[in-house]
Length: 397
Ligand code: ARG
Image 1 (tube, rainbow, N blue to C red):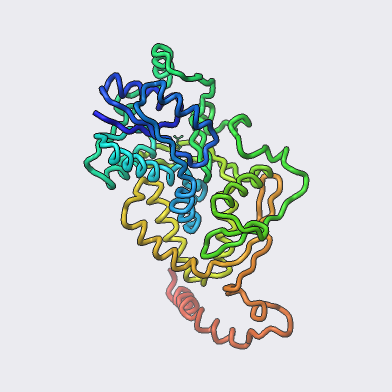
Image 2 (tube, rainbow, N blue to C red):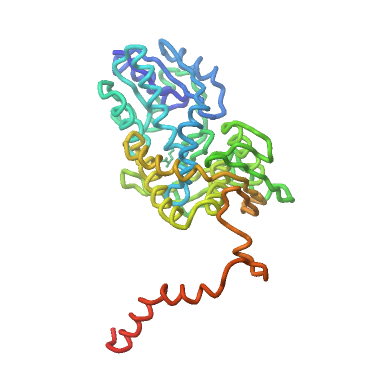
């Protein structure tokens, strides 16, 4: 049997790489995707080959990730349960797609991943893989064999796997759109996250004493410039992570409902995602009509829940995106965001497509809004409310 394994180079997947050879009698090809995690990819490759992989793929998929996964999430203002920018959730369908591509190319029978049976990631992988190619088997050894961290550490020692067994009790998943941190003391939801878990955001206490204002330009709902300087979306996200992180912006701590029914305490750092979404929403408020905004919130929520729940391949996603993309044609302009000591606030916005009109809105004498017309409007607008109250007075209730 030939298997393609999604390989991060960590404890779980290194143990799985060995187990696939020993317990499943498989020849294993490993795949590592660069989605913006900072790590030594050469070391990961070396480790895979040393642990017995017959071949290793290392693919820089950052641009594809940003263009096909992150930008749709930004246009949908995707924050699961109003908090989590679905950063891990959108990476799984891309990893799944690449696993299948390589499995097909290499004539493999199966693909494998290191997800547990308690999380969302297994759903995202399995559903996407089956939807793309139902003939490829999915092997999930952590779920199938009920592996625990302690057992894995013992096994890694016994088999002398080329791992530095780190002391870190945390489970971390990272990419350009955010960093998820779970386990260890975080499992006590009343315990404040210790400073050591954060990597891309400074403690707001240590952030610069002066606020910084950045200007983000959008075109069709997608960011194109920072402070007037043209950059590709990947560069913009990297830049926002850097600037936001420096100001301690982007930390999230919340209780999340997983698809499998569990509630879990999740901590994230996602400066770029939070800043970009805040600015994008701000510009939408200026350029879209009340009716569009109201309806888009429902569509955004639907998109976010669908993607969180592992149904990236459900045709509903593209249908929702068709609506979203139609609205984004007018989401063009600039937003100024002020960053200061862990906080951010939009302090300015402008757009050629602005529906805000100073001539109408101003309280000054030269306004072209005819206040006289408001009287008749209010009469009609409030008619049913007034009648209903008259009836209540007459007959009670
Ligand atoms: N709770 C988040 C989600 O379901 C984060 C998952 C992080 N994955 C991980 N292997 N640590 O999307």
